[in-house]
Structures are given as structure tokens and as C-alpha cells.
Length: 615
Image (cartoon, rainbow, N blue to C red; front, side, top):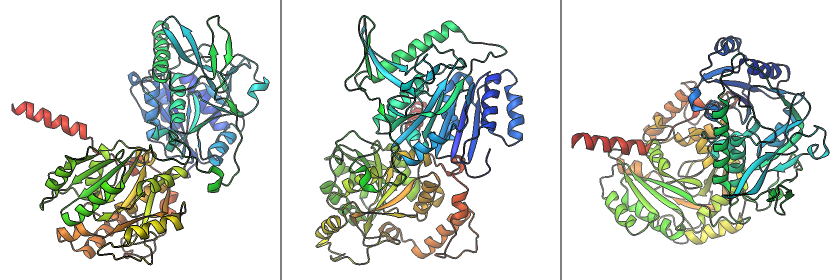
């Protein structure tokens, strides 16, 4: 296992499968992927000698071992391992899958060179040379209770060199027992469904689709990610006899039937079939089938290559963001005059489909009463009143925990938005699959987002909307890459939120939590973009002024917190150059870099329990 920051995390979930596990780990040692990688084995209450074996392997530095309860099932164990993964890509392997030479090359090539590919898998054959997996097809078939949807492995049971299996394909489904997934895509759709494919080591009938992999694939497709079969990657699924088989065959059959029922219930009518099965059992291809040849795109990705294609939300027509829902979180603390301007501009220039979440940090100037009155007249607006000033990061996290939109936008209360502002930020985010954060340009901020010259009155805002329209027309679609975006207005993709969580609450009242968030985004493999066609007015620091905070002293305090968190030498002066190479080289470490959002539902339950106890 490489000591470098891993590009690929390999996750293996096992329960009393020592012999199978040994084969898989042995071939990973002999046929390692061609990139820095880590191996995470999730052991689920094994009662054989698995625990001792893995302890020895971990002591040698070959892998990491984590524990999961067997009762939670195989898919829950996979999800557990994924949450600990540091790589940009995650490879899920079941015990008993052994790797062929150069198995990882074509899989990594697909994810590296095709930014809209969410998952990829290779050819899995059985020891007798027959195909077990070459992509999954979706079929519909009539039953006595109506149409049923099923998944089947393409070319299952046929010779491994059959012509149809010898070319890359775009497919609807891939098996979860040997699948490589882009981490951002995996977390964006919530990982595997814990209720599917729970059984460990279950013997799988020929051609049956692995249910959790099929379901994950369909959810990736629902969000616009492509799923690719690469024939060049070859693996073998061994039928290994374990020392003591504890499989209840009857229970396993019932579980498999339940899985098939759930797949049909979840996806019938939502996805198009690749094949139809008639009443007499004949199989015919569907006219609207998804399976087609896959071509690897070029190594460079100019924006014009994708045109106006949206990603990863393709529920609307190309180039159209009119159906994308965004959650806008606005944190308030006094400064009511500026909050009024912000609210007025939001209601005028933000579509009713978007949700406006106002979180107040215990204002004393009538802000909450004002917000509640406005919210009573606008269904898209909700108000959360904190009992105390939680600070910028924690206050925003409260709002983010309530958000239900495709993307989130954190917006300062001392801003004034302009016509089309949400659409421009969303269009930029969706046009760049690797983006995690997007910010606008403005009149008053530090860094690259500040325009050197604005030609409107910054006090009265006369001419501001006209200036913003001219900026949009002049720089339509233009983006700049940056290491840092400021948090006065920050679009956060749901994928990034799933991967790194919320703002770091260690930063208290505010400042440097946006630097911290951008750094965590880069470590997780996401990019930060400036949308040059989106302009938002920013007054700047009005909540600090309202609170009587010494802004200069606050900046120095926050800089010390940032240095301490990231291991920057304490003597490093404010605004002096910092070598980020060492920080970026350490890679994404979920235990250190993920910040959980508050569980609002849990808070509500606790309040209700307290009230009940008092009653």
C-alpha cells in the first residue's frame, strides 16, 4: 500500500470469509493499481481467524481495518469503509474477486479522462471462463401482478471472448461487487442503499444483477453521471469454500426476492428498459434502450466540448437551469437596515422554487420580528431563531442542515443580489463537473473576486443593476479557477457538502472559515471557481460593526486559529505567503476534514422529550 496520498481507496467488506479475503488481498498485492492507493477492510463480526489475519496485515502497513456489526449487512459495511476513504475514487471489492494484470488502468483512465463518468467496472469471469459480469441491463417483464423490472448481467454464462463483450459500453447498471466510483458522485447520491444486497457471500444465480450495485448505478444515472463498462479490465470471481458456511439458504432466497421487489418498486416507471421480456419468455431489445458503445473523450476538456450539457443534474433541458432548486442560507445578527435590503433583493430576483432559510444569531434590534413577518407572506422563506450568537460557522451550519435544494448558497445579510444571480451561479456549477464551490464577483471583498472598478454609486446603489447586467453580458460563461473564495456568497454543491460537511465551528464569530472550507474542498478533489458573469453588491462586515467587534483584532485571532488547525508555524505573520504544498500533499482525511452538520431533528426530539418529562 502506497505511503503517498491515495488517489484510489479500495474498500473490502467481509464476514467469515477468510479464504476468499486472502485471495483478494493477495492479488491486490501482486497486481496493485498503478496509482497511490489505500486498502480498507471492513470486518463484520467475523468468528473465524479473519481478525487475527487482518491484525497482522495492518501491523505491516498493508491495510487499514475497521469494524462494523454484521447485522448491519454488507452494503452498510461498504458505506462505512467509504466514509473513511481518502481517495478521489473508491473501488469496492467483495472477497473472492481476484484481479487480472493491469486491471485498474482502464478504470482509472475512464474516471480521469471523462469528467461525466460517475462509475466504471470491468469484466468479471468465473473460473470456468464464462462471463459473470459485463455490465448490467434493465429488463421489464409481465407477471400476474403487473409489469416487473429486473436487472440482468449482460452476456452472463457466455464465453469471455464473445464479440459483444469485447468493447467498452455505456450501460445503466454495474455490479457492486467490483465497481470503481468517483467519490464525489458516490456521496452525492448517498452511497449504497443499506437495505439492498445485505447478505455476505451469498451464492448468486447466473445472470442475476447485484442489487445494491444496480440501485447505486441507477441513482447515479438519475443525477446525470454516466456508467461505463470497460472490457479491458478483467477480474475473476472465485467460488471459494469457507471453513464454516453459516448461510441460511432459505433466508438468502427470501432476501434476494425482497431485493428484486424493492428494485422494481423503486425504479419501475422511472428508468427505461434495455430489453423487454414477452409473456412467452422471448427477449427483445427496447427501442429506447440505454446500452451503447462508449468512446473515451480526449485528455483535455475545453468548455465547448460539453456545450451546454448540465452535470450532474440533467433533469432539465441542456443549458436550462429553470428547474434546479437551490437552498439559500442567510445568517443575520442585528444590522436590520442591511438585512432589509438583502431580503428585498432576494424576493425580487430569486425564483419562488428556491428556498430562503434565514438563521438569526440572537439579534436584539427587531430582526427576528421583521423576518417572521416577511416569512408569513412568502412560502419559500423560513426563519430559524437561535437562542444565542453561535458565530458565523455554527449559525450557517444550522441553516445548511435544513437545506433541501440541489445546491446550497451561503449569503451574507449585508449583500444585495442582482437579476439572474442564482441561475448564473448554478449554470457555472453544473457546467463544470469538478467544481465544488462557486462564487460571484463583487465590489467589496479581499482576493480575486473584487472588481477593480465599479461604475455605480455604492451607497445609494443607483446604477448597480445596470452595471451587473453589463458585467453578465460582457463575461457570459467566463470562469476563473482560484484556491480561495470568500464566504460572503458561496455556492456549495451537494456533492461537496456530502464529502466535507459544514463549516468548521472552531472559527467562532467569523473569518477564515471560508479559507478552511476551500482548502478542505481542494483536498477532497474539488475545484473553486469564480463566475465572472455574476455580480453581487457587498457592503462588508456589517454584523461585526453592529456587534462592536474590533475587526482588525478579530482577523488576527482567526489567523491564529487557522494556523493552529493546519499546522502552519505560529510565527507566520498575517497576510504573508504560505506554502500550501505540504497541506495539499497530506491528502483528504475524513476524520480530520469532515465537519458534521447539527442534527436538527435530534434537537427537536430532545426538546419534545424534555417537555413531556416536565409535564
